[in-house]
Amino acid sequence: MLVDATAGHELLSFMDAYSGYNQILMHPDDQEKTAFMTNLGIFCYKESSLVSETAVSAVLFREEEGKQSPVYYVSKALLNAETRYRQLEKLALALIHAARKLRPYFQCHPITVLTTFPLKKILHKPELSGRLTKWAVELSEYEVTYKPQTSLKSQAERELCCLTKGQSVGIWKLQVDGSSNTKGSGLGLVLTSPQGDVIEQAVRCGFKATNNEAEYEAMIAGLGLAKDMGVKKIVVFSDSQLVVNQMQGSYLVRDNKMTAYLNKTKELQSVFDEFTINQAPRGENSHADALANLGSSIQTTDPKTIPVVYLQWPAVWKDEEEQVNDISNNRTWITPIVEYLEQDILPEDKNEARRVKAQSVRFTIIRGKLYKRSFSSPYLKCINHAEAKYVLAELHEGECGNHSGGRSLAHRALTQGYYWPTMRADSSDYARRCDKCQRFAQISHQPSERLISITSPWPFMKWGMDIVGKLPTAPGQKMYMLTVTDYFSKWIEADSFHQIRDKEVKGFIWKNVICRYGIPK
Image (tube, rainbow, N blue to C red):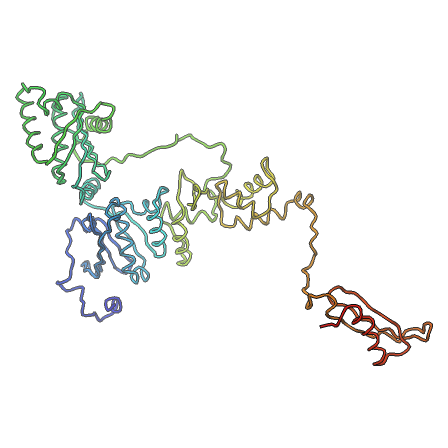
């Protein structure tokens, strides 16, 4: 509490984060991986070394005049279920734990996350798990942005080191293959951890090698990679019948060069506590074979990172059934959310920017279209108001329309997979304006005004009395009329008199009210 109270002021508490006894020293390579940075110079680095098999942690840094000084350190021991999270889920857990512990810093300053890992895409990807969705909603409270962090090391090497943290326990799977052609020789390595994380490499050989020599080179390179990761139990798969049988002792080795390769492989084999090698059919080893062909085909001497992009639809594909326009044509309620998800562009107004960031957690972009995550149904396609009118017209009075009411119409639009913010109000307004609904609707027998409640619910228990006159003279010189009216049934009792005195009133009430209906309450 003292640190929180004095941060940003001239005085510091007794827990001086600039002193040497509580500084968290980090390797320079780790400092380049993940960081939190504000426009006021506050940094929070979260390295892969701070995400282990049993715990996650984070450090809050402050930079002044080029010097970085730690301010706060938080950590969390993982529960039994949390230890089975994937690596990126653990990184997201470290971020959410830092946001909870350092809530005052996150609330007072805009935070920029510099990371080599795609945390933003992970938190906004369509196939999010329940916990990642919950964390994304929780982080939407703060002004957190994500930017890529450049580094001298290649991304593949950083991910390679990160994946090996705490995953040496269990049986690993290694697939190897070698390729040799007129363009050169290449090796393909696919190493799979017990948790399912895959590390793949395509190696270009700078020397000439036969097919058998390339197969041995791939075997040696793969075992060396597993050795560097601290793997103790491994199962190797190769499609080379010669290499597998020579390793198992079924084939004799007659060539001196093959003998040297076999001895080197046996030397690496002795490092592992459990080692098994099997011959895999070429069809089941296609992943390593593709990497080997890639390595033998590329003419290069420098390491490269070649991203593989999945193209789901052809470039000339066009959905003829879609009658809606692209989300980038006109500025609608969709535009700010799309600009933030694709380009990290936020409105200049801070309140509006906060609102857009909070909303964007529930949306994702699939094939250039914006979709909203629903709770119990598939993704809902987001449409603008012009497209909403077309959808409502088709659902209300189209071929399958039943001229339903506003509430039912909004529910039908939702179950058909569409969403826009004002769908309920628009549906009710459209149903009210429908000409056919007004013409052929059932006649309502309800009163045009609300009924007024009465004060007495019992009949003939409460009466109202009045004297009418002076009227024209009737037979018997009668010129006055005495009336009583029941409040509940509106029943009227009346009689005429020559004059009205207390005697006439008493006789009228006795004869016309008490004797007929009883004593009023």
